[in-house]
Amino acid sequence: MSESRIKAPRGTFDVLGDQAGARTELEARARSILEGAGYHRIETPAFEATELFARGVGESTDIVRKEMFTFEDAAGRSLTLRPEGTAPVCRAYIEHGMHKRRQPVKLWYLSSFFRHERAQAGRYRQFWQVGAEALGSEDPAVDAEAIVLLATLLAETGVRGVRLRISSLGSPETRGEYRERLQAHLRAHQDSLAEEVRERIEANPLRAFDSEHPDTRAVMESAPRLLEHLSEADAEHFAQVRELLDVANLAYEVDSTLVRGLDYYTRTVFEFTSDALGAQSGVGGGGRYDRLVQQLGGPPTPGMGWAAGIERIMLAGELSEIGGAAKPAAPVPVELFVAVDGPRDELRGVAFGLLSEARSAGLSAQMDLGGRSLKGQLGHADALGARYVAIVAEGQAILKDMQGGGQEPVATNTVVHAVLRSHHAL
Ligand code: AMP
Image 1: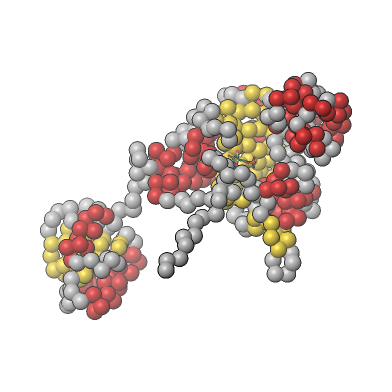
Image 2 (image 1 turned 45 degrees about the horizontal axis):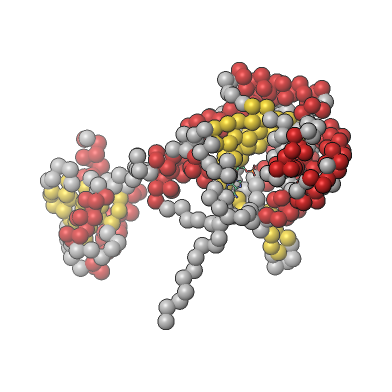
């Protein structure tokens, strides 16, 4: 009786073939853009203490309320698969005393994240993000630089129909005053609001701006706007960020309804969308989080960052063509293929020794692992585009030049030397 097949969990996917090539390409471009701008790679664990996200992302957010994969370890500690990257980076900044380094500390990552979302095209339960965080400076140039870097990445990956919206959420203090004003407006129009929005008037009234519900949208049209209630310092900061984006020639729209779904944002927030995507049009976004490090137990440290979805960049961009059909991810050229002619059990050790020797000498080498006949092995070497084939037989080897067509008997222990010599002669 055959066993039932086990499938990948809902909302997850395997990365195969061309997709893998396109992803490698995307990672290389992200690295070159971000490291060129002074960002260094960071990798944090796939799971963290649940408290990090509860405190960092915010108890009232969708992510913390309903999207986290949370579990207990054997000692009863609550752990959560990371749903986002900013809180873990801030945790690492604090844990490693990075405030003692020259500021700002600029870090980037490309990692997988986990959210228990309703799976659909462009929305998964395990997805990948490339992200960048700059900690330790509130200079508006940090904001503008971060935004321009993401714009550059989207341009270089061929993302189509890109639109950038920006806004400012001010400081928690001005937001507190504004919240009350907004709550009063929402309460005055309670009966027209979607149930979900009504339920969150107390906990998270700003999210009402994200509602798709037509009557709620009408109520929000006349709602007071945070952007009109910023403190002088916050308004000035936002004006400078806009000025710098103008200097960089980056087009944007100021959107006073942009709130984003995480509690930690202060001042600048922004989002890139692409009209090449369907309902899930967000490609990437982020903002400033000047209180987060302190909220997580660190010294007062301003921060600014963004994250962009790898799958969305691939869906809306041209990388799958670059890495796939139009320009296949170039396979590593095989310089030496080791074939065996004779009893495999006896020759395996010799062939394997030759393979190891070739690789140690820096050659890209492969050997037959499929138990093929000599003819089959030569066909395989040919399909791989191997430059040379060493046919190992009892007592000696034959070195075959797959391009020039010639072949000569050589002692097995001189094969690598012969390949290297002809390599240099080329
Ligand atoms: P966020 O952290 O929610 O601002 O998300 C940043 C970016 O990550 C979004 O613009 C998307 O490109 C991507 N993203 C967020 N959630 C998902 C998901 N469930 N599946 C795929 N991509 C996602």
